[in-house]
Length: 375
Image (cartoon, rainbow, N blue to C red):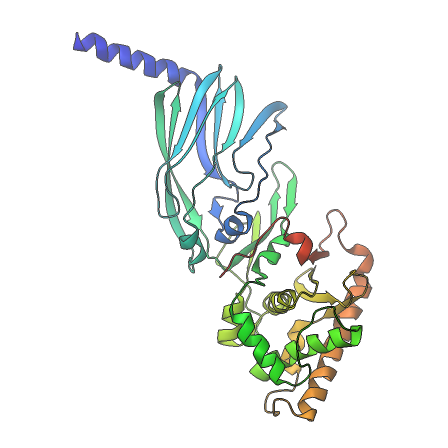
């Protein structure tokens, strides 16, 4: 009797397997997971299904989480109940997709229950094993383990290219995820800015344009008095030829180490300016980044700032709050603004066009897609 029962179970398992020509698990970004991308998009409701053509055949994309990078691809020979399980790992708790799918090829993106605190504290890249289990019509078809590269929280993916399928995706908006207007350390920094004596309070757009510039100057002065220096470190250990990323220091790292590359300094200033209700933006050009702020609430009058010139602000050693320091801060900010405006004007027609490497990232608008990653 047991012999027949075993044969019956094997037969059912074989039927389930026959309904799947092939299946595989993987990660979209060249087998890399970026905690910054995951945290920035957490809670973003973009789970519309889609259909694309691959080798002239329809490929159905099923998404429970539109921002998920983890997928299982499978080819069904007939309609079936599909269950995809992602077993617990150091980055996630148990996660599952379950649904009825018709005959065809699919890319299924399950809702992943990430361990967000773990992701936020990931400071070094390294391998992680993800274990997937596929079941068809209630029967286990198989189990697969995929080793992926989990990147550091400081790595920001900004561009993807797929030469095989001739597709590309600009992820420049991801730099806005490092703008963190909610960072509690901003309050202490603003106290430093008030000590410069350039302004007595931060009132956003309640005053004149000249008063807005003075608020910016006070923040610039506080950075200069701290001795924040330009640091060109941007490289990561990633060797991918299809996903490009850059190291970005958090606001806390800039304050702790007094160092910032072009993105770090721009992100830092945008964080503080947004915290005082000024509308800021990032300006990404080939190989470089600077930032800007609008002098009016209607966003009609942009003011560009080249943050790397903070190294030459000439404020270190000057007495904070002295007339000399105030004049020097305002003058050096003006010089920075002139450098940035000249660059923007030279390339103004190239910005935000299809396939352009010149992009202007409005932080307010980017917040509709990405949230601060909260380092």
